[in-house]
Amino acid sequence: MTKAASAKKAASTKQTASAKKASPVKGAASAKKAASAKRTSSAKKTASAKKTASAKKTASAKKAASAKKAASKTSAAQKASKGAAVKKAPAAKKVAVAPKKATARLKGTAPAKAVVHPPGDESPTALVRRARRINRELAEVFPYAHPELDFENPFQLVVATVLSAQTTDLRVNQTTPALFAKYPTPEDLAAANPEEVEEILRPCGFFRAKTKSVIGLSKALVEDFGGQVPGRLEDLVKLPGVGRKTAFVVLGNAFGRPGITVDTHFQRLVRRWRWTGETDPDKIEAAIGALFPKSDWTDLSHHVIWHGRRICHARKPACGACPIAPLCPAYGEGETDPEKAKKLLKYEKGGFPGQRLKPPQAYLDAGGKAAPPLGAG
Image 1 (tube, rainbow, N blue to C red):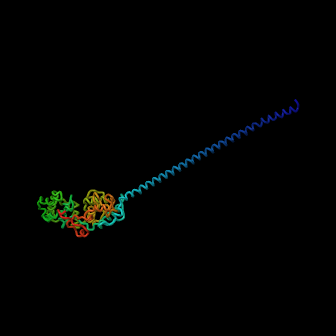
Image 2: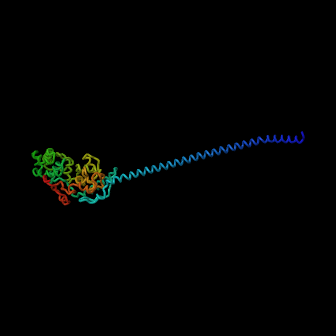
Image 3: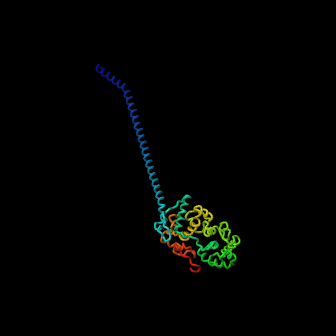
């Protein structure tokens, strides 16, 4: 081998050895690179995962917000719908509210005022105010209101009131002239022949029972009160056929002592007006008495009863011709058309005769007509 070849071989061997020495360094560098790549990849993955999670959260939040918004809109819509329904309810009631036409003054009626619908939870104070206002309005409509039984003294009034049970005041007024012409005093009626009295009272209905009552009360007046009608409630109710209603009619109209007459008209109207929910006459009397001063009781009775007979009928109230329609919670139960309602008015309000054959002059001055005697129509 030549020296040159030997040197070349040695150099080659050195290079190989050097390459071998350098190889571990390169491997380490390569490992570092790999680790770095892994870390980068892992970081990228983590970042990607975070981004995905964040995106999901954002999407979820957006969905929740959207759902909340939708729910809020739905709730608002429901509320609006409910509000509309609540608002529409009174609109439906407006059909039963006194129209402006009904406020026009009909013959003998007062003009209606602002419409008031008392709430179901009306306070006691509000009830008192409304009740008294109704009475004031009726006092303007019926300034001539009076007992619709013909009488000239307390005895005639108590007898006529007993006879008015289960019949009209008109029929009693047509019957009593013959009775009082033949038996003018309690002593006369107490000694009367029952059969003769029955014949006179036959047009009143229940004439046998009524004959027994009027003869019995006449005897009681003669035996217990010297032939005079007593002026105290506790004494009057002891007479045969006389209850609290009859007693208050006599006290209020023959003696000027305040009393509330709870007849069928009075009972019906005070419940219709929601002054009371009681059905027992004594409880009605107590409940209504608490709403008014005692001095108003007798006239109040006349106003309510007259309104019940002429306008606020049991079956067909003339709501369209009612002067207190704005104050009535039952407006609309009857005829609301003014012209049709006007045809339902009775007695002087409808241009017809009243119930008394001898009514007070104030009634005649107001346009009222006297009732015809028995057999005249």
